[in-house]
Length: 601
Image 1 (tube, rainbow, N blue to C red):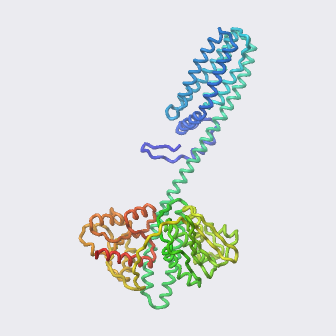
Image 2 (image 1 turned 90 degrees about the vertical axis):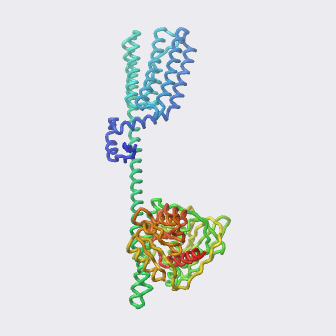
Image 3 (image 1 turned 90 degrees about the horizontal axis):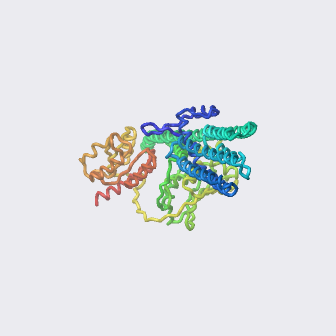
């Protein structure tokens, strides 16, 4: 078992030590640190057979009480039945006392069970010898001892040493009794030979049983050690993924924002072309990073669905808007066929990842000229299908495409077509969400990837007044970001869009209350800040102090589910780094309008 230190912390099992013990099982003795735990293990095994032992022991003793009464003279059965009843009571006590794991120490339990075993054997010896002396009409031999010895060696589940010593004590007691009543040497030697051979075989059986039990114990401990090691490695991998996700997203976020700023500032054609290529390379890097982190987080169980109701039509429209440029570059007609008032009950982020990967697969790998997202409603489910008119898939290819790093038509492994994790992520997301799904395709006839999602409740949505493309934003934004590069990137881009930006590295000054609500229209805060407060705690503290009560957004590279739940409960919007500049602009625009409306009211 896992050892426990004085501080109460579990120590990992010593796998090398356990493996070394597996090569020394013949001695039937572990080191003291392991032996005590094995005795507890063996005691539990002995207790697991208490009912067959109790039923057989008590049943046979009651049977022989009746045999004594039916076939022995009164002068004999009065004594034999009295002794049998006393021994029966002793056996019942031994069974009760020794079969209480956790309340009786193993050594005391084994000794008590051995006492009951030896007492029963001596009682049988007494009855045999009395019948020999009294010359009863029914011949009584030592055959009854075989039943007792059989139970001691094989049925009771005693340690080998207890079983062998108890059995030999019974045999020597019987032979001593034979000599005391004057049996001939030939009878004593003959009975001793047969009983000795029987005990020898029983001893071998008892040794084999304990040897097998010790090996089973070692195997269980090794399995537990392997499980503990796997859990530690999984926890280490989880910590690594959390750290890697946060640390890699930070510079990528700043890079994305700076590149967007360059795209909007640069006019010279050659330079603009280079900036565009840089943006594409950054987008590929971001996609690869997201895929690798997603598949790793899914494989270690870090992702848990957060279900809520969403309106599907507008959600799909916004999702497809992000693919319009990619579809236009490949001359692909991208369309949507969805009922206007259709709703789902799902995790929007996980479902978006699922549909996005299907769409990316159809646009990049299918060789299609037309891709359509088709939504059809059932009684309780809504089917979302991504249909293309591309090259199609054979039966064998339909199975292979869901394997990790599998790419059917990219032998050169060009980065423009990804790393081959998109559909593998889809498969794991389908298992996580427990959504029915499938692929319908034939070579040369296109493909249809579909999933079925539970229906939800349709909700009215407020219509935002969108600004014209390229129009300047107006409003005061309070930016709290501890990372210098990310802070400069956000400030530069927000100022370029027309916002007035006030930046802070720490939360202390903001809590002094030297500003009014009307001074700020939007608060953007990173989660990990310098000082004692996190970004979420800062937002809550500002609200409680009535310093700022307007719209707030948590911009973070921390992708844990716990943070998402906490932010949702606090009514704070959460966006993850690296955020697409276009999405950031839309979000800032809508929240600035909301902040201004609230300040007016």
